[in-house]
Image 1: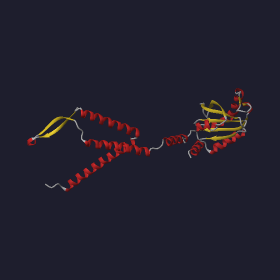
Image 2: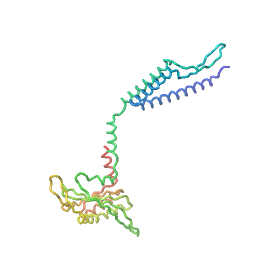
Image 3: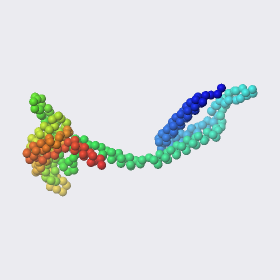
Image 4: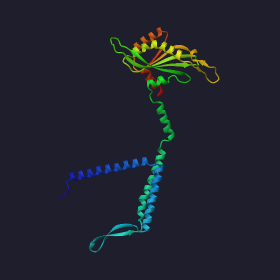
Amino acid sequence: MKIPFLQKFIKILGYTLLGITLFGSILDAVNNSISLINFRSAFFITVFMVLILGITIVLLKKGLIPWRIKIIGNNDQVQYKIVKVSKMNMGIYIPMFGIFVFVWVAAFINQKNNIPKEVIKKEQSQFKQSKPRALREMFDSDFGGKIISYDLEKDVNYTPAKSNNTITLKINQRVHFDFDSRAKFVAFYVPSSLYTPEYCFHLISRVDTLLKFLEEHTNGNYFSLGEREMDVKDLKFTGRVFVYHQDAMTHKVVDELTFLFEKKHLIPQFRGPEYEVAQNLYKSR
C-alpha cells in the first residue's frame, strides 16, 4: 500500500526539525566548550589523554582487557566469545588526534580574543570612579586637600506649628579650617525630613553657637613644613555657610532662606538633590 503524501510530508518535516534542533544543540555546546578552553585547560586535557592512552597500551600488552566479540558460525548461527585484546585498532587514534587539535585550536582562538587583564583593571577602575556619589558623601569629601575639618553631630529639636509634638533630627555640623587663607567656614548636613525648610532656618542661630563652642573647646596649632605655626583662633570666619539638604526645596523657599541668612551677615549656599545629580553627571563624563 502506498504511503499518503501528507504522512510523508509530516515525517520529513519532523525529522528536519529534529535534525535542526540536534545540530543547533551541538553547535551551542561546541561554542560554549570553545569559550571555556584556555592554555591551562588544554594542557591538562592533553596530559589526561596521553595518560589514558598509555595505561590502555600497557593493559593491552599484558592482555588484561577482555572483549566480547560476535562470531557467525555454520548455518548462520551467532555466537559470542570473550577474548583478550592485545592490539588496538589504528582508527582509535583519529578521534583522539581530533580532540587534541580541537582543544589547542580553541585555546589559541580564546587567547587571541581575550581582553588583556590591564584593560579589565582599567575598566573596573573607571567604573569605581564613575559610581554615583550620595549627597552625604559629597558633604564629607567636597572640601579636601589641606582644609582641616572639625565635626560635631547635634540633635536639633523642632516643634511644628499647631502641634505639641517635638521632632528631633540629627544634623551634622562641620567647621572647615583653611589655614592657607587664614579663614574658616561652616557646613551642615540636613537628613531627610518633612520639615527641611524649618530646620534650615534653625541653622542660622546654630552658626554662632557652633563657632562659640569651638572657640571655647578648641585649642590647637597647625603648621606646614617650613612654615610658622598658626593658631586655630587666628582664622577669620568668612560668613560662608554650606547647607547640604537631602530633600528638595523650591526656588522660592531657597530665596526666602537666603534672605534670612543674609540678614545675619551670612553667605549661604544650598546644595540639595539637584546639586547631587549635576555633580554625578559631570563626574561621569
